[in-house]
Image 1 (cartoon, each protein chain N blue to C red):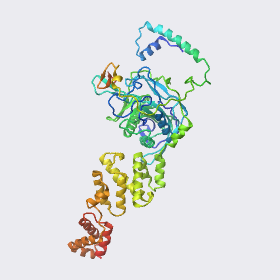
Image 2 (image 1 turned 180 degrees about the vertical axis):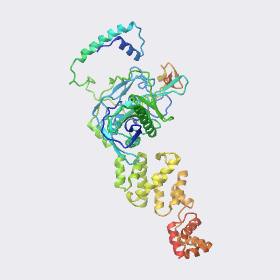
Image 3 (image 1 turned 30 degrees about the horizontal axis):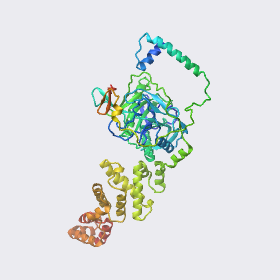
Image 4 (image 1 turned 45 degrees about the vertical axis):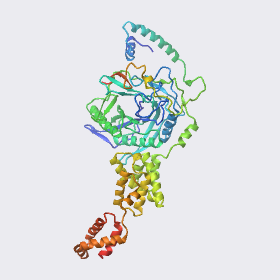
Length: 95
Length: 504
């Protein structure tokens, strides 16, 4: 798989990244390099191989259903650029 | 979660009449049910409804860097119990995946969900519409996922407010097969599912508080044709709205198709005020959730013992309860259906039945019909008027049982029992005490009634003569006069008997 300049510009737009016209061809080349490695990995036959979730033979680590956390409104909001009345306040996201 | 549509070839009776002939509806529902749990799916923060904004949020729910999710075992147990109640396959191995999307109330930038390997696989439920139409609706899957936070858009002119209290609360997404063919079937499916969830105790089914909401997939086709392109109406939160949205959406699609257009597969919103659906336009031009396995969680592996424990913990489900009410208690299918539609309702009925039977020294089957009629008629009518649920009934099952016993032994006539019941609703007192204190007991004492009859006959000597002369219809007049004289407390059967004797 390979990408062209148009695709890179589109993906950048979706990822909310602003790229200058000069940056695009440079990134296209870099991304194609990476995609080349991915193609190489995908060439490996893995049909019979179970995906590995962990290297340790652990099965599960469940929590009991008890309230042990929360009631830290000020901590939760501490890094918010803007908070009002206990809410995060963000630019209006509805038209 | 997009469902792969399959066709069972069944044709429904509900059709939309268009200019070019009748169109058939195909409906599938994705129901999001909040799992009953104290803490969230992956954190120890509380799930309670209605807390101060952002007060039930842990740093995991706020997606602070480095915080790791740990699975709440109770949420898994509830999903498995739900799956078993729907006769579904329980997957011994399932996995969590990340579903990536961008929104202000999703701090992680992804939702932890189950995509390829859900915890519960295929099942089915039997539904019955109000018109008595019976349909089997297939269940495609149930998976566990996190809820997002809540955005509030109307508190400030220039800001959206975000509350993360719901962020991370466990949801079960219950995906049906596209087996429904009418708004009535969709409504019956949701209410049946709700009754099962409430009986199991895995979801409180409270649609007003958003504990249960549905994404509705609707498409139309000419009979016998393959499925049409569907639209998904997001987040509809009442059975009535689900039905309204289906009716509107089907008509909209028929109009487009008949005008030579084609349906765009899209997500729509239902506006309850206008009764219409409209396109949920998004500026995103790529709808790809980029699912991948959640690296912070191990696969979910279930032992046979765990599943057996879940199965053993299931209560009697509404469908088998209903069958038992019909076969063991001899109730009509209608009464059995009404009394098993809700877990709280059937629990109340069973308490009433036990109490009523014990007081009258009879078997439950002997008193079942009277108890069922009183509960579905008088009690439900009164609760409806008061606007309260059965769980908040001002009258207890024991008081209901006492009232039924007082009717059975003749202490209270039907009309007197209704009076006493009105007072019970207001004062919450026991019926026996009310009847005693307010002198509402039925008079069966022949001496007192004979006196009343003699007085009525003396005051209406002309009518007595007419009656004796052959005007049989006047008998009702005398009964009415005697009842009136007794303040409505006379036992009508005794009055009838005594009057017949007195009038000769």
